[in-house]
Length: 274
Ligand code: LER
Ligand code: MN
Image (tube, rainbow, N blue to C red; front, side, top):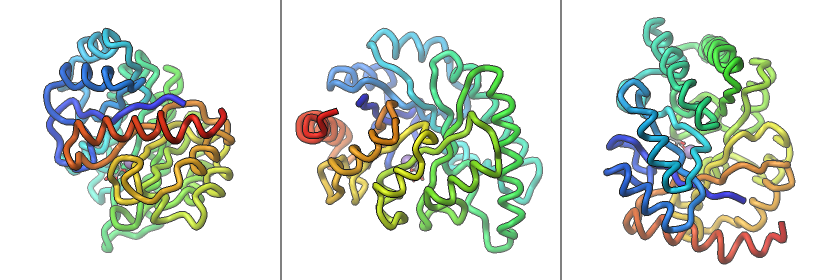
């Protein structure tokens, strides 16, 4: 099982992005700690030099399994379900702008909070219709380039739209695009799923990326999640992509990143007999 770490290309507000700051020195550290890849959180692809990013990441032998898009929500308020049609269009254009770099690196484009959170004034059914329409447009634009998208079920404390994997599977049905899958996140699943392993089993073949953090959103090993059982269930679905660390930079970012990978590589993965 390959392990990656979320890395922002710019200083970001989102607290669970493990590492922020100078890009190349972070990539060098992540590679030296034994990670296989970096999931890049990119607010706006027009503000980064994709050639340069890819040169740096490849020079350290790392992959880019996914691109996170949530900063466009967090920092600019873009969303697929905003009442303002111009904001919805801007969110769709922003996702489409990620396609060239995703095609080049083989990264999955992650749709997390960019879907929006749906305020009480907005009709839920209307928001779902906007979401389905936006995902169809993004998937249609991505398909000719061989690019896949992954929708992340996010817990109730952060959004009212798609909190669990069953709702995610229903959404995939409605969108009807084979380049759209799900990205389960162990932190959110611990809040929303009745039995994490069973929910994962129901998603066999539709998991395109995976986020890992412990129950308290610290690094794996710092909380009470049973990663042996969860990762066994994930493997049994046929998923062979990266498990990507997205956890709080606590007690500090470097310590969290090192302890997380040590726990997974030394304690959990060897016990799975994969
Ligand atoms: C992003 O991957 C995530 O998990 C959300 O909690 C962002 O707020
Ligand atoms: Mn996540």
